Image (cartoon, rainbow, N blue to C red; front, top):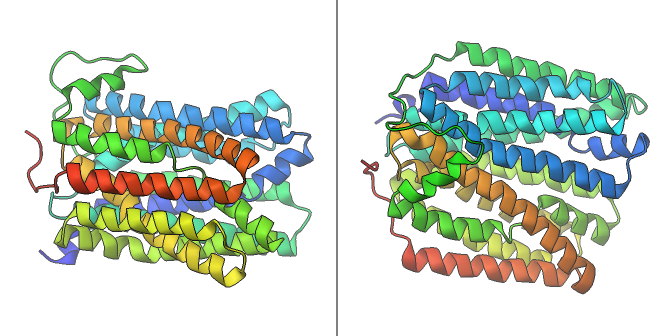
Length: 397
């Protein structure tokens, strides 16, 4: 099968949608903490804000993925999700009251929760079991390009207009709403909704665990354990800042990481299709373990660039491939719920991991935190290597 046939028009459209949406988000990623501090937010309040926002996104991913399966539609969730995230950008600077900021920031993350599972389910529907690695890899690559362009746009804008932070929030609306408009080029890919009694409770997606295939459950367990030790990338960037004393170095390392991630996502997805997803995913886990082990005592700029380059390859070898792997283990009409359960539990676990890592850091220091994470990720590697079977090309019946 040729590359042209493997990557459909809908996959390209979704990839560009994600890229523009991520440009909008990443334009503000390094700016939001500065803005919040300028309007009187304490570090504690910023932490609470981000925790509430991420919890909202995490839990809603499963709920809306399940809802999408129940009604047999994807596009309404995709469009509304991207729209809420786009409109939240300018709304954040209209009023600077804490309660308004909480509402708007949560709306942004709520939009992510609405769209994620449905978008990934639509990507899965546009692929065959033999091509899902490259489909998800291409999409992740374009999504990550947004994380390259966004910060660069912000840096250039603030270089020429250093006192116009508020204006940047309004400008971020442009790529955000452009992402929404592109979704109207998509056509609904109809499918038969889930059979049986529909459940609409907010936590009803958790019931999928009981009906999921054994292969799905066996993969989900180690990946959630891994997520419980996979803390926020902000801790890695904080290590760079503390070691080098330069915020610019931290930002440039972050951009470099995203460049490597973006350009290697599709090749690793293609490799996963040609070899198998388990092998590629395990390569990624080894690289993750190496990243955290090396950064524990890293001090120089060149070391940080090497470490973040390795980290970018890890992301390319695991992020999209894990979703592709899961979709090959479930029925087509249950894809939204299956992906939703995974990403919801993953999001909540990442929150717990970040809090736990912060605690360990404050008591025992950064090196202990990173070495512990490295060791735990290697344990997950051993578990998957020994107990999780290589994925077949047969979708669950």
